[in-house]
Length: 536
Image (cartoon, helix red, strand yellow):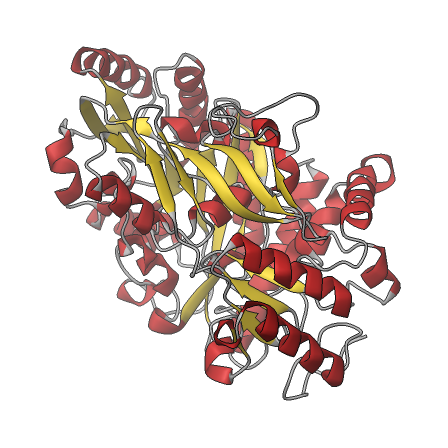
């Protein structure tokens, strides 16, 4: 099925070294030899950074760096001819879910850092971006152009706008609710044809980046978390800068009151009082962004409760802490603040911390990176959490099911995940990021020291077990690490796994050779399934 894992050069499934060389020569001739690389230095970044060093078999055979849509089309057509799988990435920084590694050994990476064009329309409030654009790039373009706009962004600014959006990634400002910021996609299909979703199906239609649909079925969502094509352009809606930005913090000192906070949050989001995505985190999750485990405890097993209590008090975190914000005209912000403060502080042990309202001239220099993120100012400051276990050589795998935004579901998930984490002897870093006013992700960050192979393997086994246990409660993942994807797919068992069977029918129709990102989201297609994929 593949070459031996010890082979110096990874080969794609069913492709000989001679065939691979012929394909790479064809790529170089079509788009330029300077855009095709096979040396170890060029390939080194395209691996899972949080695997045990030296253990990862998911290594690419080459990397291609297109600079135009025409380059991408040429590469896709040639990949079909030689049956060489392609693995497109935007920035490759989604480290908790596998980083830049391809999900099949020997795939040829498509690295989009040579495609970073940004077009901003201030009148209608949107940007059109290519797949190499990072959150920092988008922010800088808005600021350099003097636009009275702001983009809803992720916590760590080095990631890609397109790739994060395609993965249903979470940002925080009002347009982030239900991942509503994206609009029209331009896609290179697996046969090399260029396709545009929605009203992009018309020549020169000005509403393509403004209206999410068109005439007939809307295919935009088919290209999210799928392997049906390569998105080369996307519209991303931007928000007018509000008169006032009020960042807020809520503390919960009694762990048992967290579910009550969830009920109050749902009520306030349904009413529109809170119109953004809060982030509710437990003590250790917050502490990981401020300190290291070794600052508090160096013993084996999970950190004891008394130590967690000490961390909560010394860092002023509480047992749960929620960051959130209000935006808009000052009178509206003041009204909504009074309303939410009354509701939340009716819950025992809950406090809304004093905060300050800010106008746009203050946003860029706010000292707290959490508060900058919520108003669209990116940085790498919150990347510190990866070093909770292992310092500079720390890592983590993320587990993130979607649950109802209710006290009952939150308490049930909290009990299950706390117990499973303790049984595995790991620290429990948990939090919730509501997708909308009715549902939330319950994200577990499972940290480890990459220098400790036993701990790394235990973390991934815990994540896999959590996927299965959450599945028994009816909860599925909103995104997943490559090593968990097949287990995640197994949970979607309705009508003999009709969802995955449907996905694979589309794959076989659009991409019969299985060229684009084989295995992505558990979608392999017939050709590679008949060849024995996914591997046991």
